[in-house]
Amino acid sequence: MSHKVIIRQLRLFAYHGVMEQERKVGAYFIINLEVDTDFTRALQQDDLAGTISYADLFTIIQREMALPSQLLEHVAGRIARAILAEHPAAQSVHLTLLKENPPMGADCQGAGVEIQVEREEAPSIPLV
Image (cartoon, rainbow, N blue to C red; front, side, top):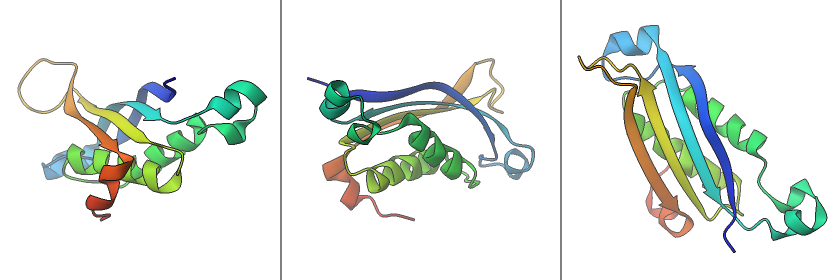
């Protein structure tokens, strides 16, 4: 059986970008998150302790998005590492991070990155 805790189309305002102006004026970002975990206990017992709270995941995303970075890759990596570090039951993190209306001279809804980090991969990714 496969279990995922999911947050879809989370929209947050933050200050990320290579150009200094992007980090000054900010922009909206869209985050999609899937965390693989075993929530069999929650299925059987209606107990929050048997799963990963999406409210806790939101808190991690919000905290990491509040730290300005040049690269979305760096932000996505921080979010994934924090989820794995703070939630031992998380087996993997699949995250998409898009900047709405990016300043690149193209008409698009968003541009960004997508990562998938497995728990066994996490120790090789240094925390910065």
